[in-house]
Image (cartoon, rainbow, N blue to C red):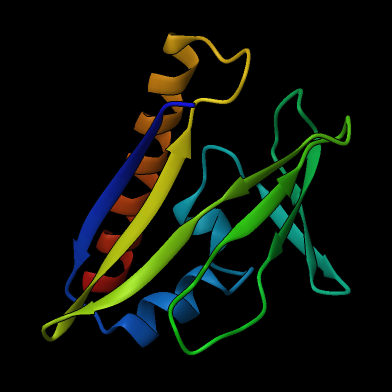
Length: 131
């Protein structure tokens, strides 16, 4: 399976980045292309995509002190995709990393679009936190 890890330097502490990503109220700000609104039930985020896809479920790994932001997205058809994500300290700032996988049956074009979307989202987080 092909993969690509996108990395973004952010001039904000790893703790600040971690809290931003883990805050459901922030998701529509940095993932506007796939998130119109979020409701949370039993630690699962119900994300209204605002598209024909409808609502997806997003579940993060347990809160931790290591910057691990791995999360599973479950599509309406029940398909689940694990998204590895980390924030690590980088001097006074941090480095945010997200690995995109080209899943079975995914076209090269769709893989590139996913990479572009994740890159946009990470840039938006950077902009939000560096403002």
